[in-house]
Amino acid sequence: MSAFSSSSSPFPRSPVRRAARALAMLALAGQLAACAMFSSSKAPKPRELEPNEARFAASQVWTAQIGNLGNIELQPLVHQLSVTLATASGTVVSLQPTTGEQLWQARVGERLVAGVGGDGQTFAVISARNEVVALRDGQVLWRHALPGRSFTPPLVAGGRVFVITAERALLALDADNGALIWDRPADDEESLALQQALLLTAVGDTLVAGFSGRVVGIDPDTGTLRWEASVAVPRGINDIERLVDVVGHFSREDSSLCVQAFQAAIGCVDARSGSTSWSQRLNGAVGVHGDGQTVYSVDATGRIQAWGRHDGHQQWLSDRLQYRQLTAPLRLGRVLAVGDASGWLHLLEGSDGSPLNRFQTNRSGLRIAPVYAGNTLIAISNNGTVYGFRPD
Image (tube, rainbow, N blue to C red; front, side, top):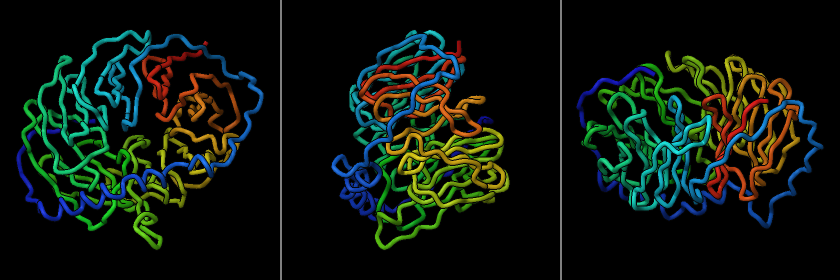
């Protein structure tokens, strides 16, 4: 990702419209969260696990404790030889991935709803008070009040902190002092918003965000639209069924960016030309991952599917882990890693989805997708225990 140069070009916004949309989102946030998960009284019984044959040799090499995650929208930040995590109680922790050793810790002093963004020097999280909180050298550097709620970890790049709000507005802030550089208001009239992290990343010199079934490319200097590509079209008879925001867990290979539109579709776009490569209908919510040839998805029932990255053709489908409430997948060489709500970390064969090995973390469960850093596969359980695994 290339650095963004610094510039200022503020965008006007409508306080009345913004406030009305925020109130609508808050009133229905609980209902939306319920739609994204299985009801405990109606959930089908998780599929029984097959005997573990351990066809891929790996071992747990370390554990660390960061504190209960709570309900934070956590996206672990991997930067060089560090993995930075956050908890809902306000703790931000950076770990050395090969050993699990704590590199630094900061306490924000208030509850957090999303994190962590960072560039290795400046780190940013979103507080429950609707503020962006920037950290540097383990200390709070500045706070910036947002015009509405956000559940997406900020993106820190090129001396700026980029934020997308739940109502789909975009802001750019100065990483040194939190000053507003530009503000792009939401450009749609949808009354509901997803209480989940949305797509926010950078490809080359373009800021890329996702909402309302679209992936958009934004000029990071001015906030102006460069291109937009559709992945899903809102359908349904009510606002909840029509909610198709693009969720935050994505797969990027060069300019190919593959994403999940909430409960609607998966697809890939060319972030250089701004064109849609392909899109396939799929009811899911956790996001995708992949490599240069294949994209992997998890649907709402826990079926894992592999798709050709360049043409969207389905390569295989596995229901071995159905109804186990899976995390987003992670592709590592031949291995596809995915966690479940019972605390199992599953290693699958990327070519056909067959089991390779599995490890029990703890019964608080896994809802955060595993990450890879320092030749170590890292799983984060809901109770805040972090596990490191490496091939034998």
